[in-house]
Structures are given as structure tokens and as C-alpha cells.
Image 1: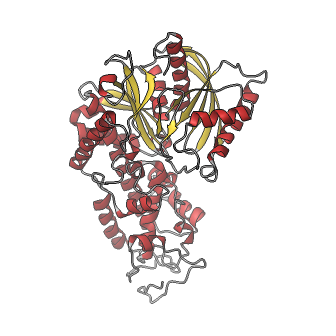
Image 2 (image 1 turned 90 degrees about the vertical axis):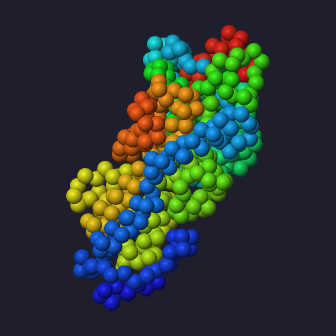
Image 3 (image 1 turned 180 degrees about the vertical axis):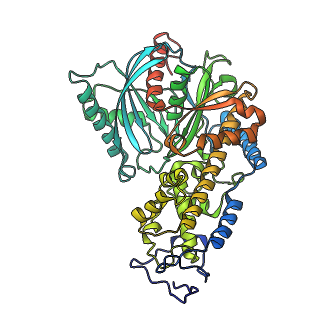
Length: 504
């Protein structure tokens, strides 16, 4: 589509036909805009025009303290409903991890972690006194592997495990070595070594897995490749993160994942988990709860302030209407919000006039890591951003445009961090520990690598909880899921050896 400019230039057609992704879904229409021609050969947006668009985006992406408190109140009710009634959107899954570690657990364990980006295999040596050593290997998951038949996925996991064992145990791994499987997707459990997948998240869609016991599927693959180990415990990465941090930091009460996806786990008393009854288990006995709260406000969409960009991401995902909260705060999606805004501005004739923009029109091509890079660029000229747009998208930018991009990245990052505080505050409120405070163990690249994410999240906790928000302290728990999985395997073995809830 041609757009007139002040110099009566016409926008040349792209060498690759435009897909019109943004305009088709967002309802954008191209219009005439006055602009300056700073470079003399490529027209660019004028600063006043960028500022107008920025102010409009501020209104859409800013969440007030009052709105955060309303979201948190709804979140608390959702958590409690999940504890009371089976089959809820936020399922509040009992994990059959009973109590916290003592810090004195010892032994050698294998942990396998199927995350959203990598498969990790760890050899964890627990030394006691809160000390451990980890040897690990990572195996990259392709997008194709995340969609192929479930049997092929678990075969891949088994092959990677056998490669690891052959490399690190040349004389053979002990047959009695416990294997913990960190499976970070909504899974219903009746005991700790069994789990039925409710639904895939984080972009996975492997057929033949939902509704089936992932432990059974994985054990079949292990047998196929003659692996001497079998699954001892299935855990979620959030549970593992909480347990691993508690092993070294006794004030840890919550485990949180902020990476490709988002989720939380915490320890609750049995009298609060009214949907679950275990013979001989007292009301004050504690069990870890895997919230799976990335699904908060799914389907009804009553509480979260979704923009049209969020709606596009939702409706074009492989799970429309699901994981509403996760789609607004997780690392998989923040770059896509940014890209959709840019595509809309391109279709309106605001950005990149006269340049071929086809490379930026591919969904999810703009990684959240790019936003992190732009936010961390401290140069006046925003040289990192300039290089990013040239290298990945063949797009030239002005300094004013790059400053706009940085401010937009900050808006998106702040919104995600503030919304992530709502889930933490909801758990703290439910547990009634506002006055006491607690440590929150956080794993995931978004929390670890996004500039200022922790500070933005903490500011929002104060907005929600007042001065008590300062008592909720987050800490980075790197590799929590692997170490935590091993600790849980050790706790499970000790519990069953003692005859405590041995059937679970």
C-alpha cells in the first residue's frame, strides 16, 4: 500500500509481499503522515509523531496500584477455589511432596528437566548441611520436537539421558540411583511417581500425551533404550525451585518461575487443601502445591487488562483463551507484544517508510532478549538497538526512533513485572504471612536477565501490600529445578523408607 509523504514520495512495494499480519487482526489502516527525511534517502518518523504514539501506549500498558490490588484480590479467590474444588482453571495441584527439606539430605541422584527451551540432565551430589554439587548437560529442543508425536519426544529424552550416563558413568550408573523428572506442565498426580498431563503449555503441542501418565510414557522410552533407571518422582520446576532454595535459605516459602512461561509453588497445610483427603494425614501436615497459575483469568478474561496486542497473541496461539496470565508476563510473549506494536505502526505509515519490513512481519521473530538489550543500552545514540535492527531486520533507524523503542520496551517490561507481583502477593495473602514476609526463590531467564525486573516487581509488591511488600524478598535460584528435583527424590526415599505415606 502506498503512503504519501511531505516530499510526495511513494512507498515502494516490498520485494516480498506483505502478510498484513498486524493490520488484518488489529484493524489498522494506512494513512498519510508528515515526516522528516533525516537521512536524505530514507524517510523516518518525526519525534512529535512518535511521542503521540508513545503516550497512547502508556495509557494502554500502564497498570495502576489500585488495579493491581483488584487483580490480586481476584487471584486470592481463584487460588482458594482451586484448593477446594477439582477441575478448576487454576488447578492448585497437590504434588505429594510432604514438608520442607532438612538441609541434611545426602546422596547421588539424577534429575532430568524438560523445560520450555532445553532438556537438562543433571547429576546432583547432595552433601548435607545445605551443600551440593551439580554436573549437567543441556540439549536444545527444536520447535519441531515440541510438536511431533509424544513417543518421539520421550524417546529423545531417553536418548539424551543415556548419552549423559554413558559420558559420566563409564562403568555404568548404579541401578538403585533415584531419577527425578522435572516436568513443568499442568499435571495431575495421585502419587509422586505418577502424573497425568492436563494440557501442554509453553508452545508444546505433542499429540498422544495429554490425558496420559507421563511417567509411564517416559519409562517405556527408558526401557526401549535399555536405561537402568526409572522415574522415582515427577515434580514441577516451581516446586523444585522452592525446595532447592529452602535447602540453603530456610526462609524460602515460595518458588517462582519467570522464564519462557510462568508459575509458582508454595507449601500449604492439609486443612487448606480441602479437595484432598489422605488417610492418617493430619491437618497441619504440609504439602507443596503447584499452582499452575499461568492460567489465571483464562476463558472469561474478567480481571487482567488485556490490550488488543494481547488478544492477537492469544487468538493466534495454539491454545486460544488459555494461559491468559502467562501470555501477559512470560518471556515467550513480551517480544511479540513489541513486534505487533511495530507492525501496527508500519501499517499506519509511521515507521520504516520506504524500507522492506518483511523480516519483522514473522510472528515471534522479535525475541524478548532484544527488549532486554534495548533497555540495557546506555549510549545516547542507542547503538546496540541500531545494530540489532540492521543485523536482524535490515532496517535503518534514527536516534529518535531508537529512543522510542527503548521507552516502549520499558513499558512492556514494567507491565510484565508489575503483573507478576500479583501472583506472589496473592500467595502471601492466602497464607496470611504479610506481616512476617518471606523469601521467594525465582528461576528463569526473564527474572535473571531482564534489566531491573526484580526492582520493578518489588515496587509493585509495595503498591499491593503496602509497607509489608518490602518484607517479601526475591532471590535468584539458578538451576533450582534440577537440584530441587534431586532433593525431592532424597526426601521421597527417606519418607517411604520410614513408612510415611508410602503408597504416595
